[in-house]
Amino acid sequence: MHSIETDEIEFFGFIPSCFIKELKENIIQTLNENNADEETLKLFEKNFYIFENFVLRNVFRFPVSFKFERKITDLRIEENVQKKINEYLMLVKEETNIIREKQILQNKLDIQKYKYNEYLQINKIEKEMDNLLDSSIKMVNYVQSVSEMRDTFLKSNCGKNNTDLYKMMEHKEIRNNVYKNELKELLEKANIEDFQRFIKNL
Image (tube, rainbow, N blue to C red):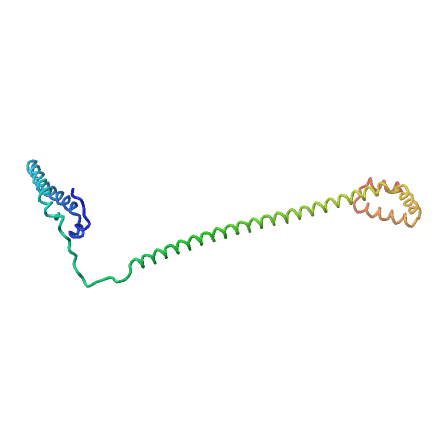
């Protein structure tokens, strides 16, 4: 297969070797469609070999000294193409930098959002811990207060207080009022045994 020259492709408008391949395939297809016998196909192969290696070489190849002439037209490009290419490359570079900077800013924003959400979670936990601590302190103070009241009561002069109570009960009017209150409570929620015990104590 002949080497492909750029000027040849431009001159012919196609690749010569591809034309030869397609030409051979089309001829073989035509022979097969017309039911050519084996001898005819062999004769074709022989003649095509001669055609490809001797005839086509002179048709599609030019002498080394042959110069391809280009058509002269009135159209001339005066603009600096390289300048346009450089400007385009600069735009591509700037766009790439903008995309990269945008991604960096987005990453920073995501990090700040994560830190803010983390701060909110920590703040919420701290508030809950403070509330729990306050409740614990109140409970401890309450228990301590009850304990102190109990200790004070146990350490106080209970006998003296009972004596004072008995002295108060010696007054008939006070004693009657107490009994009346007890009787009223019994009438509301007591049973027969409570009545009997109350009457017995009178």
